Amino acid sequence: MYSGFRKLEDIDRCPVETAAINAVLNAATVLRAGYTTIRDLGTIGNVAVAIRDAVAQGRIRGPRVVASGRLLHGTSGLADTLPAHWENCCGFGLRVDGSQEMLKAIRRQIRDGVDNIKLGASGAEGSPHAHTWMTTLNEEEITMAVHEAHRWGRTVAVHCQSYEAVKFALRAGADTIEHATRLDDEGLALFRQSRAVLVPTLSTLYSVLELGEKLNLLPKQREEMQVNHPLWTDSFRRAREAGIPIAAGADIGNRYPHGANARELEFLVREGMSAHDAIRAATGVAARALHREGVIGTLTPGACADLLVLDADPLGDVRVLQDAAVLKVVMQGGRVVAGTMLEVSPAAGSLVGR
Image (cartoon, rainbow, N blue to C red):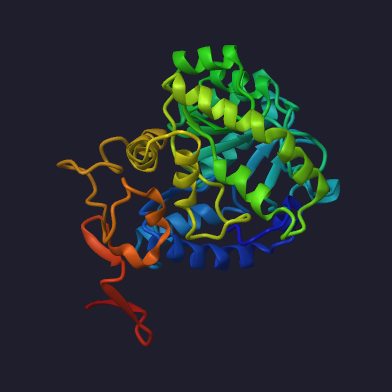
């Protein structure tokens, strides 16, 4: 439901009805860009679950959606942007303090049908109260969340931009570590001992560096990202050299628009990954991050028949994946759903081969 929001407060000013419309439009855009499965890591209300179900039922066009609910954070944490008297409304974040509040929030999201739980364990550049180097959930809260989510068969993704947030999340058994802006030797050792996947979201970093002035982003966000830049790229390098599994996720829609998802692969290569490994990060390793190995992200018997037919070689230049003109066919589940070999009939809204 992100659609060019300049700061976190703008997300909470978006009515849930508008968020749902945005999500329907963005789902179609992402599918046309060649992404047949995506994970949503934080939504207004329960929009991601609604989009997931509408796609599965064939009511709208879009990728399969692994849906999260509202982002769970502590008071003064990542997405604490709402005034106190609004805290029970359907904003982007939900305040939880202590393990029992965390337990209740997890169970409510299970009731709402989520696939994944998103935790905000540290501040962020755009957080109004907390900086990225601040750890805003304690280890007990994170451990409670992971244990309860896993008990119900759900995955857990943890926003981690501080050193301690990474370590708390890994010791708790989180499935994915988002960002890992700060990663020290102890964090790397814990990563090696875990099954967790790193999602570095380099697009989050570079979108602020590239567009901060143009979009008139808040001074805190721009200044803090300048501090984070060398730390972030060094953490990514160390994780890559240590053989930590890395998946391509981009926090897309906040500054880079939906459909520009493949910019993340460009940045992975820029920071030292081979084009082949960057493509794996967006396919096979991404499937591992979603606990869907062998079902998506692979061309093997019994898997979903998802594939791209390209008029270019992404191994020679991975940036070609950002060019809609070279995406000849996007196949999802054995059915051609997008690509330049198709055209949309305006009257019927249907796809016609040509």
